[in-house]
Image (cartoon, rainbow, N blue to C red):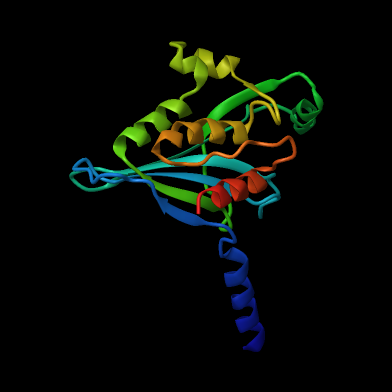
Length: 194
Protein backbone atom coordinates (compact mmCIF):
# COMPACT_ATOMS: atom_id res chain seq x y z
CA UNK A 1 0.00 0.00 0.00
CA UNK A 2 2.72 2.45 0.99
CA UNK A 3 4.64 1.64 -2.21
CA UNK A 4 1.48 2.27 -4.30
CA UNK A 5 0.92 5.67 -2.66
CA UNK A 6 4.56 6.59 -3.23
CA UNK A 7 4.35 5.59 -6.88
CA UNK A 8 1.10 7.54 -7.31
CA UNK A 9 2.61 10.61 -5.65
CA UNK A 10 5.71 10.29 -7.84
CA UNK A 11 3.54 10.03 -10.95
CA UNK A 12 1.56 13.15 -9.97
CA UNK A 13 4.72 15.13 -9.23
CA UNK A 14 6.40 13.89 -12.40
CA UNK A 15 3.46 14.77 -14.64
CA UNK A 16 2.66 18.17 -13.17
CA UNK A 17 3.83 20.90 -15.56
CA UNK A 18 6.86 22.58 -14.08
CA UNK A 19 6.39 25.67 -16.20
CA UNK A 20 3.10 27.20 -17.27
CA UNK A 21 1.43 30.57 -17.21
CA UNK A 22 -1.83 32.10 -18.37
CA UNK A 23 -1.98 35.74 -19.44
CA UNK A 24 -4.87 37.85 -20.70
CA UNK A 25 -3.91 40.32 -23.45
CA UNK A 26 -7.51 41.09 -24.47
CA UNK A 27 -8.62 44.69 -24.65
CA UNK A 28 -12.28 44.05 -25.53
CA UNK A 29 -14.92 41.37 -25.42
CA UNK A 30 -15.92 39.68 -28.65
CA UNK A 31 -19.24 38.34 -29.87
CA UNK A 32 -17.31 35.94 -32.13
CA UNK A 33 -16.02 33.86 -29.18
CA UNK A 34 -12.75 33.61 -27.27
CA UNK A 35 -9.37 33.09 -28.89
CA UNK A 36 -6.23 31.76 -27.26
CA UNK A 37 -2.67 31.14 -28.38
CA UNK A 38 -0.19 28.96 -26.51
CA UNK A 39 3.58 28.82 -26.79
CA UNK A 40 4.51 25.32 -25.65
CA UNK A 41 7.53 23.05 -25.21
CA UNK A 42 8.03 19.42 -24.46
CA UNK A 43 10.90 18.42 -22.19
CA UNK A 44 14.19 17.15 -23.52
CA UNK A 45 14.20 14.26 -23.81
CA UNK A 46 10.54 13.41 -23.28
CA UNK A 47 9.08 10.08 -22.16
CA UNK A 48 9.54 8.64 -25.65
CA UNK A 49 13.12 9.89 -26.04
CA UNK A 50 12.21 12.70 -28.43
CA UNK A 51 14.38 15.84 -28.15
CA UNK A 52 13.04 19.13 -26.82
CA UNK A 53 10.67 20.92 -29.18
CA UNK A 54 8.53 24.05 -29.19
CA UNK A 55 5.25 24.61 -30.97
CA UNK A 56 2.31 27.01 -30.98
CA UNK A 57 -1.33 26.20 -30.24
CA UNK A 58 -4.32 28.06 -31.65
CA UNK A 59 -7.68 27.69 -29.94
CA UNK A 60 -10.94 29.48 -30.74
CA UNK A 61 -14.49 29.06 -29.52
CA UNK A 62 -17.23 29.30 -32.09
CA UNK A 63 -20.15 31.67 -31.51
CA UNK A 64 -22.60 28.74 -31.61
CA UNK A 65 -20.47 26.62 -29.28
CA UNK A 66 -17.62 24.22 -29.72
CA UNK A 67 -13.92 24.87 -30.03
CA UNK A 68 -11.36 24.55 -32.77
CA UNK A 69 -7.82 23.63 -31.74
CA UNK A 70 -4.59 23.26 -33.71
CA UNK A 71 -1.01 22.81 -32.59
CA UNK A 72 1.65 23.65 -35.17
CA UNK A 73 5.43 23.52 -35.17
CA UNK A 74 8.40 23.61 -37.52
CA UNK A 75 10.61 20.55 -37.60
CA UNK A 76 12.69 18.36 -39.90
CA UNK A 77 10.91 16.59 -42.73
CA UNK A 78 10.43 12.84 -42.71
CA UNK A 79 13.54 10.96 -43.82
CA UNK A 80 16.02 13.55 -42.50
CA UNK A 81 18.77 11.94 -40.46
CA UNK A 82 19.31 13.11 -36.89
CA UNK A 83 23.00 13.63 -37.66
CA UNK A 84 22.18 15.81 -40.68
CA UNK A 85 19.81 17.93 -38.61
CA UNK A 86 22.34 18.24 -35.75
CA UNK A 87 25.10 19.27 -38.17
CA UNK A 88 23.04 22.34 -39.20
CA UNK A 89 23.73 23.80 -35.75
CA UNK A 90 27.43 23.94 -36.61
CA UNK A 91 26.98 25.67 -39.94
CA UNK A 92 26.11 22.64 -42.02
CA UNK A 93 23.73 22.93 -44.96
CA UNK A 94 20.04 23.26 -44.04
CA UNK A 95 17.99 20.09 -44.33
CA UNK A 96 14.44 19.54 -45.52
CA UNK A 97 11.97 21.04 -43.09
CA UNK A 98 8.26 20.93 -42.61
CA UNK A 99 5.63 22.83 -40.74
CA UNK A 100 3.42 20.19 -39.20
CA UNK A 101 0.49 19.54 -36.95
CA UNK A 102 1.78 18.65 -33.48
CA UNK A 103 0.60 16.01 -31.05
CA UNK A 104 1.00 16.22 -27.32
CA UNK A 105 3.59 13.55 -26.54
CA UNK A 106 4.28 14.20 -22.88
CA UNK A 107 2.25 15.23 -19.86
CA UNK A 108 4.97 17.64 -18.72
CA UNK A 109 4.67 19.96 -21.71
CA UNK A 110 4.65 23.54 -20.53
CA UNK A 111 2.92 26.51 -22.13
CA UNK A 112 2.46 30.24 -21.97
CA UNK A 113 -1.27 30.51 -22.75
CA UNK A 114 -2.52 33.87 -23.96
CA UNK A 115 -6.09 35.07 -24.30
CA UNK A 116 -6.08 37.51 -27.20
CA UNK A 117 -8.46 39.68 -29.22
CA UNK A 118 -9.64 38.24 -32.55
CA UNK A 119 -7.48 40.69 -34.58
CA UNK A 120 -4.33 39.60 -32.72
CA UNK A 121 -5.30 35.96 -33.16
CA UNK A 122 -5.72 36.46 -36.91
CA UNK A 123 -2.29 38.16 -37.15
CA UNK A 124 -0.68 35.25 -35.31
CA UNK A 125 -2.39 32.67 -37.53
CA UNK A 126 -1.15 34.57 -40.60
CA UNK A 127 2.40 34.65 -39.16
CA UNK A 128 2.26 30.88 -38.64
CA UNK A 129 1.58 30.17 -42.31
CA UNK A 130 4.59 28.72 -44.09
CA UNK A 131 6.42 31.59 -45.79
CA UNK A 132 6.25 30.07 -49.26
CA UNK A 133 2.53 29.31 -48.89
CA UNK A 134 1.94 32.92 -47.84
CA UNK A 135 3.75 33.99 -51.04
CA UNK A 136 1.31 31.98 -53.14
CA UNK A 137 3.09 28.65 -53.64
CA UNK A 138 0.90 25.56 -53.37
CA UNK A 139 1.09 23.69 -50.08
CA UNK A 140 2.81 20.74 -51.79
CA UNK A 141 5.47 22.92 -53.42
CA UNK A 142 6.04 24.89 -50.23
CA UNK A 143 6.44 21.69 -48.22
CA UNK A 144 8.99 20.33 -50.71
CA UNK A 145 11.09 23.52 -50.63
CA UNK A 146 10.93 24.41 -46.94
CA UNK A 147 14.27 24.23 -45.12
CA UNK A 148 15.24 23.60 -41.50
CA UNK A 149 18.37 24.62 -39.67
CA UNK A 150 18.99 24.53 -35.92
CA UNK A 151 19.52 28.01 -34.48
CA UNK A 152 18.48 29.63 -37.73
CA UNK A 153 15.15 28.32 -39.01
CA UNK A 154 13.83 25.89 -36.42
CA UNK A 155 10.99 25.42 -33.95
CA UNK A 156 12.10 28.33 -31.76
CA UNK A 157 12.29 30.71 -34.73
CA UNK A 158 8.79 29.62 -35.73
CA UNK A 159 7.50 30.41 -32.23
CA UNK A 160 9.29 33.78 -32.22
CA UNK A 161 7.74 34.66 -35.61
CA UNK A 162 4.26 34.03 -34.19
CA UNK A 163 5.11 35.83 -30.94
CA UNK A 164 6.32 38.89 -32.87
CA UNK A 165 2.85 39.12 -34.43
CA UNK A 166 1.46 39.48 -30.90
CA UNK A 167 3.85 42.27 -29.85
CA UNK A 168 1.31 44.98 -30.83
CA UNK A 169 -1.16 43.29 -28.43
CA UNK A 170 1.32 43.66 -25.57
CA UNK A 171 3.39 40.47 -25.68
CA UNK A 172 7.03 41.12 -24.84
CA UNK A 173 9.23 38.97 -27.08
CA UNK A 174 12.79 38.45 -25.80
CA UNK A 175 15.66 38.00 -28.21
CA UNK A 176 16.78 34.46 -28.87
CA UNK A 177 20.37 33.59 -28.00
CA UNK A 178 22.52 31.05 -29.83
CA UNK A 179 22.36 28.68 -26.86
CA UNK A 180 18.61 28.80 -26.17
CA UNK A 181 16.85 25.46 -26.13
CA UNK A 182 13.08 25.35 -26.60
CA UNK A 183 12.70 25.11 -22.81
CA UNK A 184 15.06 27.98 -21.96
CA UNK A 185 13.43 30.21 -24.57
CA UNK A 186 9.96 29.53 -23.15
CA UNK A 187 11.30 30.37 -19.69
CA UNK A 188 12.54 33.72 -21.07
CA UNK A 189 9.19 34.37 -22.77
CA UNK A 190 7.28 33.65 -19.55
CA UNK A 191 9.67 35.80 -17.47
CA UNK A 192 9.22 38.69 -19.90
CA UNK A 193 5.42 38.48 -19.55
CA UNK A 194 4.54 38.33 -15.82
